[in-house]
Image 1 (tube, rainbow, N blue to C red):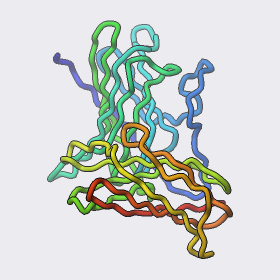
Image 2 (image 1 turned 30 degrees about the vertical axis):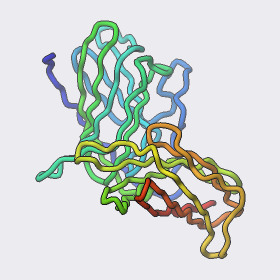
Image 3 (image 1 turned 90 degrees about the vertical axis):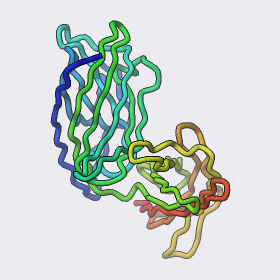
Image 4 (image 1 turned 90 degrees about the horizontal axis):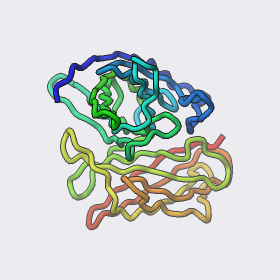
Length: 264
């Protein structure tokens, strides 16, 4: 189906500062479906307005992205649509994508379609938002330019099988003393445009406090949930700087990485 494409440019200036507060992690349903989320861009195509929201400013790593779809003729929210996002970085001599997750099903949640992107490097990204209105079959696409800052939540690791893996820390977002949810995502680069989720890893986790020479008890190794997401529990017994070492096995392929986490 042929349709015109309109490009909306939404430049998001990102500053990484210690102590910055993050936006709400859950959209609210109080007449303002985007709640306290951060609006990062908008555009129009085929008689539809597309608005893009995030929980926080973009940096390298995993970001939940929320799409609001409105009919421009009536201002009515679209609550049934197929919505997907495709990240693309143009480096001149080459282009590549990144891991991403489309909205599951076709029903909006509190007026928003939930997607996610795992930005694997800093720089200017092109984010393509595709939609198909389930009511009348209208399809469209809006393209937004998104600036992504550097970050330390993603590690690129070469496996012993020769594949390049991307391991991203998703939780804890605000770590505290005591037991915390620990969540990572794992993908590998199949091609420059394809980054499948890895769902068959055995993960061993060991948190330590290098400056004090001790670890912590009662940790739960992350196990696969869905779409490359692994969830476990990590116990930080005191404030300070911690290191979480991860050993991941996939058949005969072995991976190792670590994340440094500061407990205030």
